[in-house]
Image (cartoon, rainbow, N blue to C red; front, side):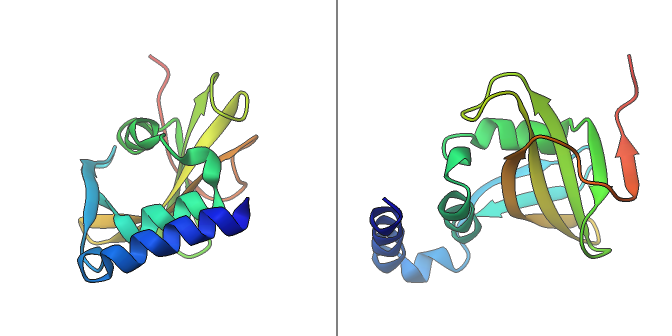
Length: 129
């Protein structure tokens, strides 16, 4: 199965290798007003390593626009945004979206479903309404 997925991704890359250098799938304004973008290259990376996120672009946008909590990532310039979903392809889980930030913008590094929020410095938390 993985060999077939890899072959499919490689075919896509070969068809449009030049286009993929700067191709953008979407851009969204995050909870902190930063412009965050997802490129086709990062999307292919994400669905290869985390196939359960395929078809979840709407949820990825929602996580960035309206996360429940944002935690500092492995480096100071990365953030992990989390939002809990009762219904996902892999049961009730958080969707985590990892973003690298550069001044007033950033880009998505990866995204995945997880059972819990990573320990670390909480940078932002949604207030209870």
